[in-house]
Image (cartoon, rainbow, N blue to C red):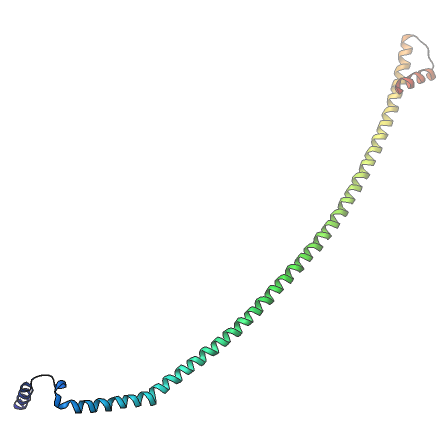
Length: 177
């Protein structure tokens, strides 16, 4: 066994250079190169390339379908947005109508309450003025009575004699002005 290994090593050492560049084997190398290239060509053209083409066609179909679905969804989104904006505008209009009605109702209630309060104030003021007039009339009568009594007393103390009619006329004349 050792001799066989030694013989193979000796033969390899006896031929100098690279075996690929040996011109005696070029024909054989070119033949196998052509056979290998033809086999690779047939494998690629009959098996690999049709599969790659099918995958690419499938991908293109999926992309086309996805783009169509995206366009449909975009159209639906635009429609939904328009419906939303319309509903929002309708809601705003309705809210403004409700606010206007509420303002009108509140203003009517406020006007009614103001009118009622004004009527109450006017009634109380008239009642107060009536009471003041009564008090003033009573006060004038009381002052007149006191003035009559005081005048009669003063005349009596002074030593004069005057009847009640004369004293009453003099007091009434002085009270007028």
